[in-house]
Image 1: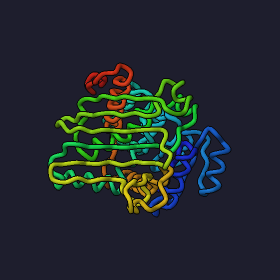
Image 2 (image 1 turned 60 degrees about the vertical axis):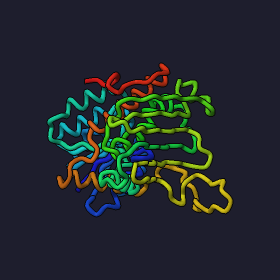
Image 3 (image 1 turned 120 degrees about the vertical axis):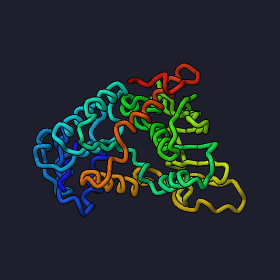
Length: 334
């Protein structure tokens, strides 16, 4: 199949490298408003260049991957759907939830598959955790803990456009909690502070946050996030049930050291970057997308799925601002 990629920044080039290594992908077509970036990537991967998204869609692509800036996501998703071309789009669907809802409504019933990029759904550890919950081997869950700790904060320009740590970072935890447990979040209580980079505080955002989520069956989920983790990139999940407990992310590259005398775990080089930690998951995610394009499986992460994680982020943002518990139903739009 021929796949078009819109946006050849860091993640777009990473996706190009992954797709170029898949046997089912015969050729790539690139488009990016930054001509030099597009040209360099095209030379590297032997791809055809298109001058615009419209030209890319007219180049006979079987599918398109949207790795462009967030503001461009709604128009590019709609353009792909209008052309009858399956779309993979990095999260979020749109900058605001209102825009995301509008996208959902405009593509509903089109029959054109859309997959949103929540890569943790394709990580082997998270997939095994989901299977353990579904099989009942953990018993009924009572506690879930999720952690995403970045090694260093993003630059000021990124923070200013991110929508805040809950919408940009924590949303990955919110999505994976829903996916692994199979439950919805009913209520949240979130706090946040600034202990590091001044540009995050000046943007009105927090660099370290905590959120307590009450799931619809009464399970308590706790989410911890930070832009500062001196030892590396730390993503983990714990699931505690009445019969057993399970953890995701406890490998030898866990960026944590033990204070216990004689402890040798973890012994490897700590993860330092999300593309390192989730390289296999990204490959599995795009492999799944080629199966969606081939019509051999449904989208594993729909626009609706992405919006559900977004509502939790909205509730946490409001909770932190107003110092109170917030029901997800309070922020949800039709």
